[in-house]
Image (cartoon, rainbow, N blue to C red; front, side, top):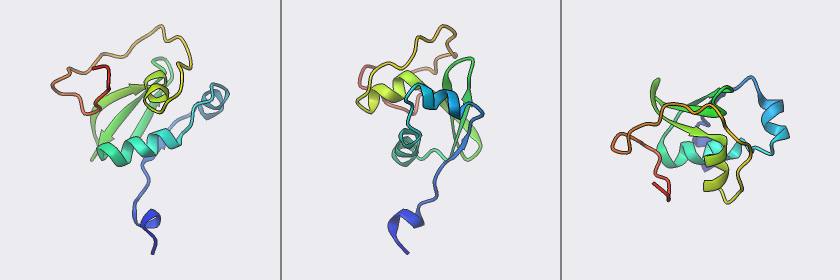
Length: 99
């Protein structure tokens, strides 16, 4: 069995795939984030334009579509007017270069 088949891909719960596709969002970004931080599930909340990141059914952090694009070498995808509650930097799992 190859290494790629051994790794289980993270579950992505998203009802807005067409919308995100229009914005040039790439779902592979989530898989690389899952591999780096051990997330096993992402849940998209459209009003925040962000994904809740889970490990073992516990919500640990948020990442919005703009930050995902930025950490993958892209540009901001959209103006986000309604922000999710920011996780404290001491509790945050995802390490941003600008944090």
